[in-house]
Amino acid sequence: MFGLGLPELILIFLLALVIFGPKNLPEIAKTFGQFFRSFQDAANDIKKDISYHASLDDEKKAIDKEYNRLEEEAKKNGE
Image 1 (cartoon, rainbow, N blue to C red):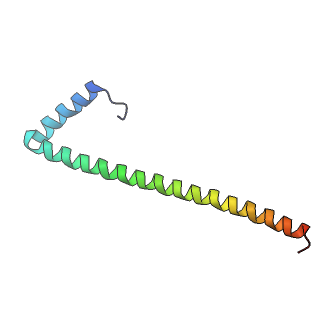
Image 2 (image 1 turned 45 degrees about the vertical axis):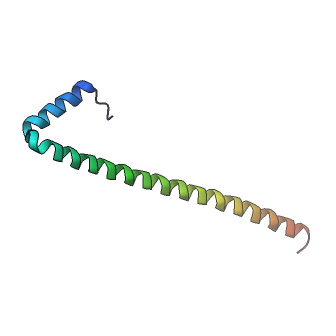
Image 3 (image 1 turned 90 degrees about the horizontal axis):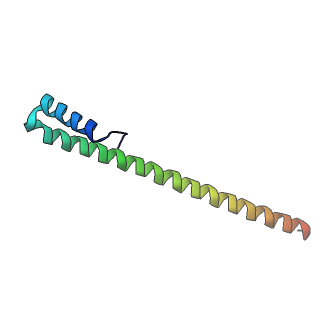
């Protein structure tokens, strides 16, 4: 997680405990967890949007290819 090992996480926890105190630490952790979760949800939404638009682009390419094929076929048949 972010390139942090166990010693670094313990140090961060101890610093937070000293700075904010034991009473405020659970609330701060809860707030951080909610923020991180909303950040993950937003990132997942962006990934879904990109995937959706990429699939639409693939479909458009397939439709254009078929249209061009039918147009060439119509030209050959004299229509």
